[in-house]
Length: 426
Image 1 (tube, rainbow, N blue to C red):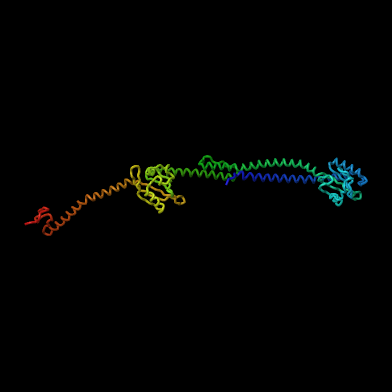
Image 2: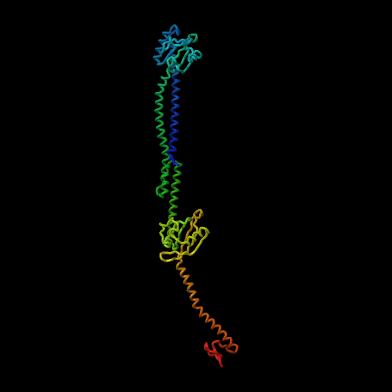
């Protein structure tokens, strides 16, 4: 799975959130401006309607259509609106844009109905007379007795309102784009501000992993990242101390391992050579770099050695036996001891073989056995003679003690020695 950098996990959400806020604020501002302008336009139309009531020529009736119509045209041009005057029966008495005589009855218009009933009416709808959407505000015109005799209705095209609002919308849009740009820049800066110390931390940890502990990481201002950096620096110090200790111990073990007279070979459970010292490589006549990681049977051909390895792995006990190996043109005898190897978790990982050259000792033992055998053979005959003489002497001594002699077998009665082939005769 492809890893995503932290900045691309932080920056897009920041950007989306910020742009969402900007768009929402822009939309809300535009809607508010639109509604506010419509309300302001309605209020302006209401004011213009009241001004028209004060200035309209009297009487306001069908008998004065021409004067009323001219007034509507003049007032509409001055105020940049459309002004319509309708009597209480719906007959158009004057209009700034159309001929009132050709206009249909306006009694059913919603703003006219509302003005006749409530005194004021407002409506935004499509006008079939001018073929566009219009905003209307209608006020009733009363006589001195308070009776409604006509309705004054100023109006304005919605397209004109939209034209005015479009300029405002453009300004709002420009402001929104500027804010969006600032939001993008700020989001990017915040994302970089957060991720940059982490990038430095990653580079520092990589440097620590390579064994370079000389340069410590700078502690940033952010508390959470600062704690992480301080922990990384402490870890580097501890790793440095432990590596120095391990290297020191390794050097000591290597010195002991190399200077050992005994040959040592470490073999894994698959019979591959893990390590050996100088003495073992000399005994076997091989070089460590060439045999490291290879099976032991690729450079040592000895059935007794493999029997010892198998017995060590199977019995899980210390095994020992003498093995004869050819070193150059000479056969050497080695006392080999096999011991199981374990890791830190006490798992069996191989066998440790220790070779001790006992060739001279075995020769001495063999010579000692031969010497003892030869000496035993050489002194066997004298000892037998001495034992026989001692037996005869004992018999002679016993005869004298009884008053007569004991004549040896090889002497006559007078004590004279007789020949081996002579017979006793008178």
